[in-house]
Image (cartoon, rainbow, N blue to C red; front, side, top):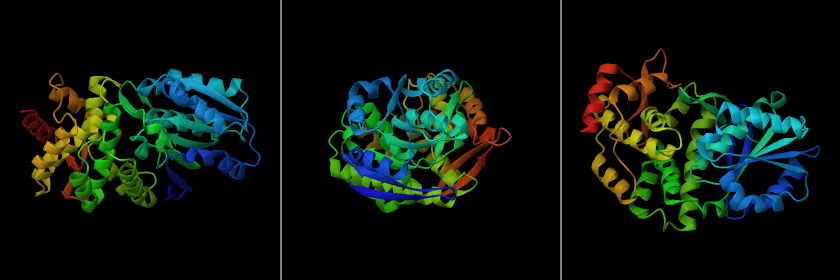
Length: 358
């Protein structure tokens, strides 16, 4: 087992990473919450079918209520958020209750937002079940979606702990593995050239990646996330660098329809575009082609879906919460491990997108 300590201005908490770490969940709860009344476990239909019995066994000493919601981005709606709050009220949760978000990034986002707003905030734990959640479960961003934009309604609300049990990753589809691993690649590109080199030279197949190597890569990603979060909890400065690839990526994800393209695969294309843009804006010398060829070997799509139009993508990017006054901001790289924030004009964006689409 590995343990990473996340340090923010509002809270310091542990992230436990390893196969079987949920076995320690009960003792952690006993020590951390001596006055606990009820546990609300929020999970989705897919995770419930696979692993609900595991969670019930881990919490056998406690009164636990299980709220099961739709899988994926379908969970992050106003309706499901309202239903989740109603569930908490009907089960008579109080301020001594805790919520456990048991699932992927969507469940972590929804569960954390429910916890942050129920009775003005109750404690919650993250128990991720996807590779992607190594990023989303750490750092305290919680939210639901609006039809006009992803994660538009939310808060910064840190968990009390994260129990990242790699046992739950065994059932991930190849698509979900790619989605999650794109954020690992992102972390290496924005902060750690040596880690990027390790990934590029060491990872030849996401399906055949050993448990030891996967744990190493996930822990490195979490440590890099902590580097930015610890210095800038609420994204007023360098934490914005974690959005590398997200400006275009969120636009692709929204235009394709949430859930039709995975978050990570959309972000991956956004990263490739940001690298191309960096060539123009920062004189980045990094050769993109070997990266692109490596990603193709790993099974990634590397081009914007043909049915999407430049103008629609730009309108989506203007609506992104990272944009100010409808001016589009991009995280670009001066070199690998050296990110910087740039404002890009609409005219330049059109030109660069058309070039990227060729």
